[in-house]
Length: 150
Image (cartoon, rainbow, N blue to C red; front, side, top):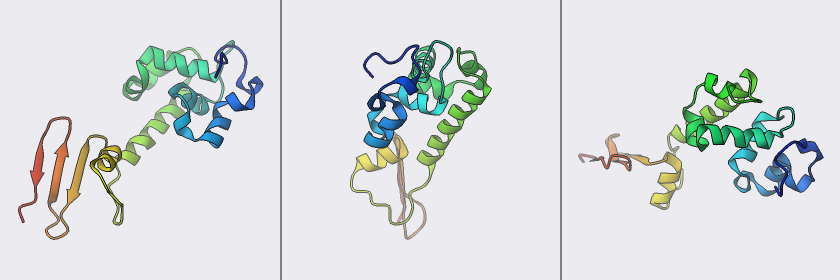
């Protein structure tokens, strides 16, 4: 992204620097948060690319955590973000939350605590197959735990 964040439309950038094209060739993990937001926003505002608007959003709200916590009105107060863009971003965040909250399905391979942590973002719940109670409930946020009585 060598210098291509400002006034030039992304369509004029070299293909190797465009967020959507990079996502398709390198995967989403290769993009910055601002670049991922730019894909959702689709277009910027007069004089600023979608990547710049994404950077402005993150600067104003304090990165992804602030974006996840803000309301539609606060998001719409950022130049270049209207109700449609705000709704798209909030919908994408909600889908991410729901994906993380989805229970492990039968056959999900868990080989380490890292697998559990990355799947459940700080909270692991492992059901006991015999009694259907929780075998382990560990919350890294408060240190609480529980064990199956059998």
